[in-house]
Length: 120
Image (cartoon, rainbow, N blue to C red; front, top):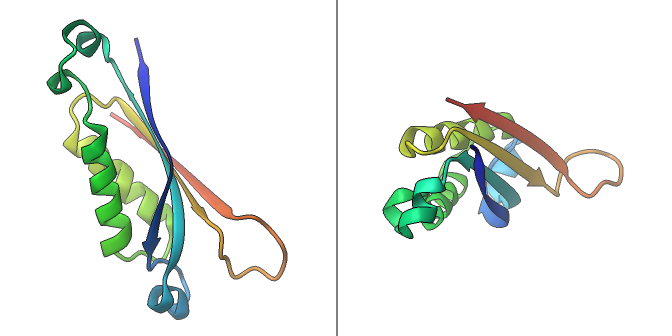
């Protein structure tokens, strides 16, 4: 059995990018986190200790995006996914989607998105 917790469209201000101006000026990043686990025990006990504390996941992701620096979204997403898997024994798999609306591309687009999935 696999159940899901979704944290969608979180917005953080970070300093990630290949170009120096991106790492100096910073910009907004939008993230979705999908956590796969078995929540049947939590459904029976109604106890936070039997599930994933998504407020803790949110705080960890916020800390990483706002206080660490990566050139590539792939590296940022991989780091977030690994941290979530390492710190949550219930999580079987995690998907991290990162959207960057301000990209150095000479054309119109809403955003660039990187999606990283990791599992145990």
